[in-house]
Image (cartoon, rainbow, N blue to C red; front, side, top):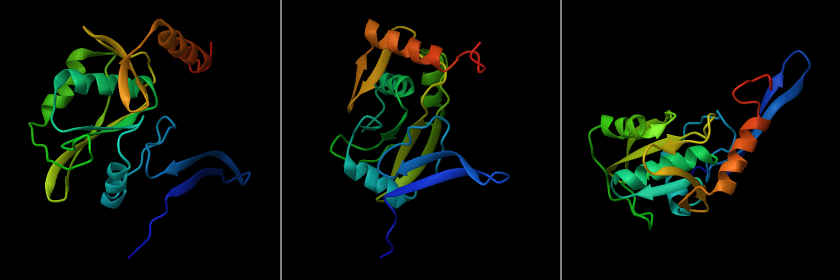
Length: 184
């Protein structure tokens, strides 16, 4: 049996100066916390994520209930991003999921402001179709449902953002220089 690493440390090296420009530790059981860091996962890694259960960056949904789905996408974008599995029960049991492909994207673009770009992957786990939606941490926070408000992720749950939560989001965005990359 081939063993895979639990963690990987990746560096970007400046070839001219032979020094590390940036690095990230990737835990295969969790979602990367760095913005813009994309990785492809093997089925073994996805199974391990499912076995570890729901957490701040992982959510399971047996089916697509619009409100709950949108709350999760918004909450992930307003915190550190996450993986949303459709066709997986709360207990990690793979139940399967089939639905028209455009519905999820249409729900996001029609109800969330500003729009969140997610990556949708259809795959088979234990011979059943599931959908994996990778939601990045947002760069234009806070993200809001046009009718229901703003949500954040706390532990393994979504909750409505409080005034204190929103103040923290705006403070984080101001410190990062958004919308001006040079921090004007």
